[in-house]
Length: 447
Image (cartoon, rainbow, N blue to C red; front, top):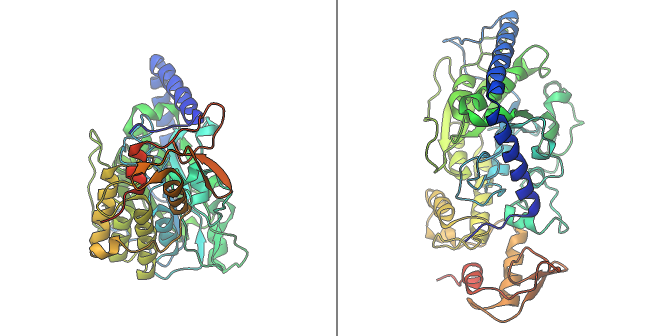
């Protein structure tokens, strides 16, 4: 089934491709950018040497302590949300473009809290290769991605957010306090401050790349490593020497190699301790990727853990002592609730606008590692708005798995088209009845 994309998404892709074509045609810019990168890299190296640590690594550096505040940095495309397989964003075609991966937000929160389930945490920030100078490509506080990383979901949120899984429910303690690293958050946590705010994405502390990064995976990785190193450099985040970082990326471009490979051996200035606690790398199904593999923790190097789903990531995090058992169960609740709403228990998709059969099979496999077939038929632990949308669609537009001739249905105080359950009728969106395929996928009765 063809992916439906809104006009804004199409315009964003078109502008990005025009920019890309322009820079490809101007070969001198490549040379100039490489020279600028070398100058910046030399400056960073000098900065590290002046603080007592070379950018080269120390073989006897200790692992970063689990007791220190944890700053999580995550990639955007194919890590936070799917690229839909659209170049130059990424290559993951299991989910539709813009869909936020099930369990991602809860996993990020649990990593921030750690095995002791801390009640004072640092908000996560994005490290992306998206061009820094193109503002509409950046994540904002009002984006669906930012809303998914909070507990601010509202019935008034756009209908399309159900398709994107932006209505995912986070299990957040009501008295948990969160801080931004760029506002002295590390120092505030270490001093037992009590003036933190709600947990959310730290959009203001996110960092981006350059248009030219899109043509070279190594440059993408270098850009992200530079952002990582600058966090710990003099003039970077206050108190960074007393904090650990966690990197969350994917293996489709440069997040693993070279970014994670450089991060895992980086030593905090003035210490004999690694800056990185662990790198989690999302294993994608696409081909022509840079080489990447798991790596155990060793003297002078942090571990690299690869995963297929965020339930798999949480399982590995629990086994390595990075989250609590309760934290794992909360990620499990998020993933199994998503599966119960968006997939059929046999592993086929209930929502082809959101994810493919392959994605549902992948989630099903992850769930069954800890459970039985019975765990696939349990009602969702978390109540997702999308479940009510499917129920309203099926009762208003279908009779079983066949169209009932109606062209509209009502949900949440609004009227939607049977032909697309996320669209309201308008003069350019005619009210058409559902197709047989729509009813069969959304409304198929479970065996």
